[in-house]
Structures are given as C-alpha cells and as structure tokens.
Length: 335
Ligand code: KG4
Ligand code: ZN
Image 1: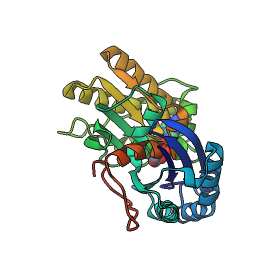
Image 2: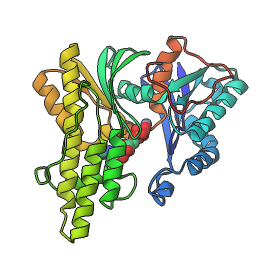
Image 3: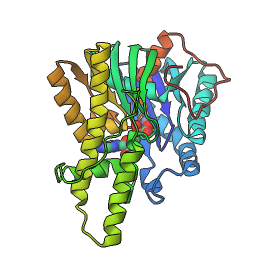
Image 4: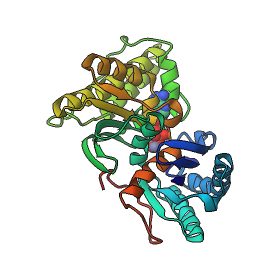
C-alpha cells in the first residue's frame, strides 16, 4: 500500500511516499528555518504562509521522486494534531482536497505517533510493545507503545519540553535558532564537570520531567557572569547542560523500563538527534541488557515519511477521516 503523507505542523513543509509503513519511496522537506531564525523562533503566521506557498510544489516533488502519479497512490495521510494551528490547517486542507479529488481514503495522523513511527522506517525488526522516550521542541513524553495505535503516556514534562529547554539555553548563550543543534556542536568541543546545574525531579511522579529550573539556572549563570564582567566558558556550560538533560531523560526512561519490565526501548523526536543523549542511552541500555532503537539523524526532526509510516497502521486499525476533518493544536497521543 502506497501512502502519500503530508506534514505541516510547525516550520517544515513536507511530503513523502511510504509503502506498507516501512519503506520510504520518497521524502521531501522544505525547511523554513532560515527565515524564522531572523526572529529567534518560529513566527506562526509566517509558517502558515510558507506552507501555503510550498505545499503543492513539495508534494509534486515527492510524487516525482517516488516515480508514481497521484492516482497511483492508495491513500492520503496528514498530520492533523498537535502543532501550530494555522500551520496544521494548511496541510489538513490540502490533504482533504487531494482526497476529495482522487476519492482516496484520508488518514489523520498524530504528530507524536509519527515521531515514534520514524523508528519503524529505520528498523524493520522493531514492533510494539516497547517503551518510547519522545523528545521534541514541543513534547517530552515517556510512552508505552502497547500496539501500533494503542499508547499510554506514563511520563511527561510539567513545564518546558526538552527541545524548548535546549533552544532557550542556547539563545541566552548567544547561539542562533534553533539552538539545540548548535548547543550540541558547542558541547562537543568541551566536556561536562565545570558548572553544577540542578537535576530537577517532580515529587511523587518518578517518570515526569521539569526543565524550567534547569533553564533558569543557565539564564542566571549567563546573566551573573555578564553583569560581573566575568568570563564564561560557554562550551563547558553547553556540555554540562546537555549532560544534565541527557542524564535526566535517560535515567527516567531506564527507571520506567525496569519498573514495567520493558526490554525494548526507543527514543525519537528532534532531541533524539542529540549526541550526548544518544551516547547515554546506548551506554545505559547496554548495561541493562535492553535493546535500544534510535532513528537515523535524518528521521529525528520533522518529516512526512514518519507520518506515512504511522498512517499505514492507522489505516489497518480503521482510523480514517471524512471531509469534516479539522486540525487540533493539542491532543493527547493516546486519543
Ligand atoms: O521534532 P522536532 O523537529 O519538532 C517538533 O516536533 O517540535 O524537534 C525540534 C527540536 C528543537 O527544539 C531543536 O532544537 C531540537 O529538536 N534539536 C536538538 C538537536 N537537534 C534538534 N536538541 C538537542 N540536540 C540536537 N542535536
Ligand atoms: Zn516534531
């Protein structure tokens, strides 16, 4: 089954062709990052306008690169939640138009479910049940993937998402948007152990996260140094920050896996590209004797191939939409 998938939840306009949930026939991404960088973050209205301009062209290229015509696809899939509402609406409306014109089934896909499915594309042997750490710019969740379309969230952030914390820490350190990847590069030039940063816990919720205190600690360190005119070793601070986030995320995941008896672990989402997090997860999984699946860097960030993968399983489960489909800015991954 060949699914044409559309993704427009944030600042990437993407389309892909995916066969039977596991094989990427084509994947095209138009990134708006350069434009949003001028403003230090995503400007929702600009994102919507660029999606509107790019989506037809991106989709045409995905079909061309996949070597099939629109009429040869079997279904149209689209990210309908969660994300920037104006951005989502562009993709949802475009996908509805394609489904209406072709008479193909329309498959609504939850963005976080898509991030989890990114690992199906890279690892043919991976199948549920498994425990997944999903860490992106908007979400930090520990999710039990009980089946392809059956999820239970057992841990979540109480404030900032991990990617948001990376971006805010990077910004105060003078790195350009999106700061996560810049901070990762800077951290690689140093090593942790210079700055003592808090590792926040949420009392009574062993698998939950809180990153705002950590972010504030970095902001205060930078501001104090600036005010006093003292030198700040930014690379060392980046290394300590990334080390702390990687430690918090990996320790919660490992604790949940041990408690619930999971032997298969997955990490996905934009922040799963972080080198310290990947290294720490590999180290801990090897020590615990559990298997660990990570997406390749090309599938960590937003793309439509992951949406096409999850869409296949949504289709098999009968989760289709009609022309009344609407976008949702927020929606739990288990709904
Ligand atoms: O999944 P994603 O592309 O978009 C959302 O669904 O939010 O995640 C984007 C987030 C941004 O906050 C970005 O800074 C972060 O992922 N990110 C990283 C790295 N690469 C991307 N954070 C830390 N280290 C990285 N290498
Ligand atoms: Zn995402």
